[in-house]
Length: 245
Image (cartoon, rainbow, N blue to C red):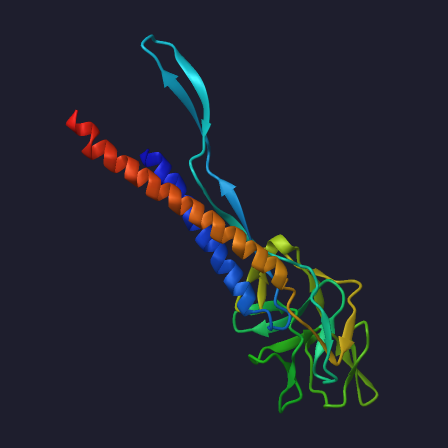
């Protein structure tokens, strides 16, 4: 009976974690380049139950689960919608891959193409991280620059470099903030990156899908909660009534 309480409690904790993940996805629906977070559950090892009899032999009844937990969080690499902004500093990746930016902690990766041109003519993120090209930071350039589909930057008729785009497996992505990522594996340079200037990629969060998941998680939480209440009542009876016999 106590074991059943623990199993149901782990189910409630897993549902709570999933609810928090869904909430985070919904909050970031309007964040450019945001990647939907996915939570997967894992069952704890099951145990074999045996019915004990008066003899030395026991009869196998079956297996009993010992609960579950959230195994890991992964990120969806599905591309979001491309929204035209007509702002020259906005860049959208229309192919797999991530822009590379330089942060104080090292290189990080993003699909949020909402960049800004600072006073020194360097393209930076809203947080001030320099956008990286194949030869280092992009700049100095003027506000009249143009970006071709393959990421080549032309400024005042001169080649100002080419944007560096890398590919990262979804299972290797590690979120740092809303739309900034690190990689648990070495990244690979994208050979066929396609970039569109004057546009931005929106979040890939599926609102209807998230609402369906939220309803499912709520039902799972309520079911486990009822099981906990029932087992608590049975335990109370075992203590208060059986003990009188």
